[in-house]
Image 1 (cartoon, one colour):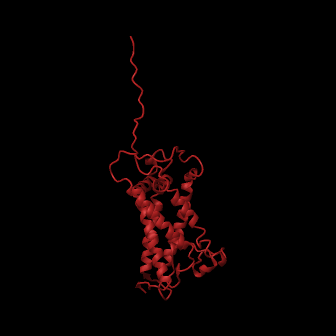
Image 2 (cartoon, helix red, strand yellow; image 1 turned 180 degrees about the vertical axis):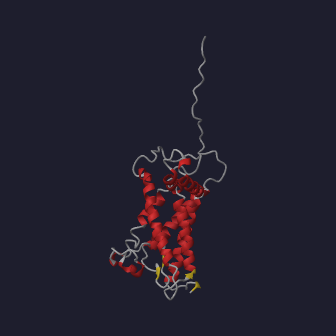
Image 3 (cartoon, rainbow, N blue to C red; image 1 turned 60 degrees about the vertical axis):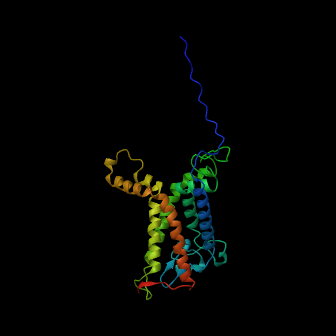
Length: 267
């Protein structure tokens, strides 16, 4: 009795780059423009070296926290080690900015964003990429993406420092308790930054990972559920915090430079 072998299944040969009919180019193009604009603004402000602090109300922009340059003055809550001569070529927040940058660069959402927008790898789902081969995140430099969980720990520490900055911003003109528009802007930005940090996949794993039985760990299970709910909006928090950082920094810069006055709500 003879058997008939099924014909070998070969991959379909499609000449078109993609069969998608929607405007798939919108996401990578808009992301490219938005990210480039944000990076340009953040870079200029990080090296600006002025209009970053309002001593009357202790408004310190997150781009300069913690401030470790001799010029920081009263804003240097945690000491200084950068001489004034480094102004203009080393950011005043040289301690935090590298870790925050690495935390965002290795974030799952940002990987998707710049892989598609800057590297076109791929530019969209079901769209052929221009690269001939893909080695994944197994070789330098992309193997560094695996350090994201450690950068997350650094981001938590920096978020605690930002929390202290906001607490200090509840200051009135006489040195007592006070609330201004700048205080509220800093507070909202802090809440959004914490939401972005705590909704991270690494946080979700740290809270509920390596557990065989959730029933034996009810507290960690509850925490894992809360982080999982936040994790669904992690990409939204990633984008929103870019905007909140710019708004916060711009407002403090305008007040610190004397362009506008802080709107005081109490004292």
